[in-house]
Amino acid sequence: MVLVSAVRDYVNRMLQDISGMKVLILDSQTVSIVSVVYSQSELLQKEVFLVELVDSISKSKEPMSHLKAVYFLRPTSENIQYMRRQLARPRFGEYHFFSSNMLKDTQLHILADSDEHEVVQQVQEFYADFVANGPFHFSLNISGNHMYMLPAAIDPSGLQHFCDRIVDGIAALFLALKRRPIIRYQRTSDIAKRVAQETAKLMYQQESGLFDFRRTEISPLLLIIDRRDDPVTPLLNQWTYQAMVHELIGIQDNKVDLRTIGKISKDQQEVVLSSEQDTFFKSNMYENFGDIGMNIKRMVDEFQQVAKSNQQIQTIEDMAKFVDNYPEYRKMHGNVSKHVTLVTEMSKIVEERKLMLVSQTEQELACNGGQGAAFEAVTNLLNNESVSDIDRLRLVMLYALRYEKESPVQLMQLFNKLASRSPKYKPGLVQFLLKQAGVDKRTGDLYGNRDLLNIARNMARGLKGVENVYTQHQPLLYQTMESIIKGRLRDVDYPFIGNHFQQGRPQDVIIFIVGGTTYEESRSVALQNATNSGIRFILGGSALLNSKRFLKNLEEAQRIARTSTSVV
Image (cartoon, helix red, strand yellow):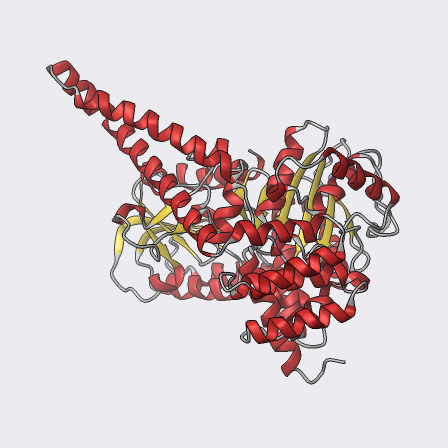
């Protein structure tokens, strides 16, 4: 459990060495970092009786000298100013400051100068500056994630801020793993190149001493790629459990907000979906929707058996046994109703939006040729009253990405139909996507029709047939991992930074996608790691996408590009 345990270890070390009652003070980003690896009950066990945000605690004046304050913050100038003001009038008995990344000397001086009352017990760097969504998957949750689509000239300081956050996150990850990587990047992407160069500069020049772990084994590989090389994956509907929940309802920091859904009991309004805390979810997160229904039925049956045995209380011993088992029973009850609620809600959405029909065409567009049939299928769905606006838009985008060169006339017909059927989406958005991620911009063999090996593989797959029509799509990342395992990742497409080259096959590969990752890709990584190929893959990204978030980023970038006069 690489990433989750790395962050958990840091949180453990922060809390266990400080005895007595504590208040944990976080910022808007470290609250996500802690919440995905640590539950509230675990914090209570560590005598944390209060969790506060650093900006809201500034407004309170009430002294609490009986509490020890544990600050875990990102080393931003804003947070350092909060600390400075709070140390000027200390409310707590002791202050322990943990930074999620490297502190600058100037920041240390500010903290030292502010501690006039000598209440600061320690200042440490604990490199947990990323959200560990799973054992091999992390995100940086960057709010301005659309920045990667904009030319540098439009908003230089915004883009610099975006790049800095990515470099910080990657640096923290490698400091937590105690490794320094060899760095490669996608040649056709300016932003991937820039992130790679700035990361290398930090690790090999500015902070080379900090990253020199004197390890003898082969260096890990850090590969930085651009989301626009595979715009298809974030546009598709999903049919495996975790990915589907994120696509249809939304997952934020392993939590699902169910308040918008009809009548739901108070304790089910926000539920946690974590493979660490929920064994049913752990064993089913990558299963397809059909199997989930069967497995949930089995879980309900087991629960009913337990409930039935609890009704047969006849003796004092039975009563004592029931009381002992009650917490477990309550937990089981909560778990069953959580998964039943999620699957019921998703079934409703699938039915309302006719997603089985829509998804079949999506998968055909992503995986198989046949332009004529595809045009007809998309046209029929655009005319179908039950198909929602967002699904129409995604279908036209998937068609455009696939056939932009082959059928420009029919593409224009689809643009016009989309404009008349779903007027809130201007065709300009599809054109903007092609400008961003069209065939001329991409490096990888997205549709398996450039490379002879891929063409042969696709033909073989077509002859064998597909096990499940809804999950036949493989993200481009899958091919990238295969190329790395076989030592076939071409230097010309993915050059090395500086004169640091790979000596032999790496055992650890970290793939970072500028622009964000999807749960479909994280599933691909987990399944690949389970094959024991001798290489362990870790996936990271600037954000965690579903189709709604990807389209929102696209719209935001298009809006800024339109209003900016400096676009050439």
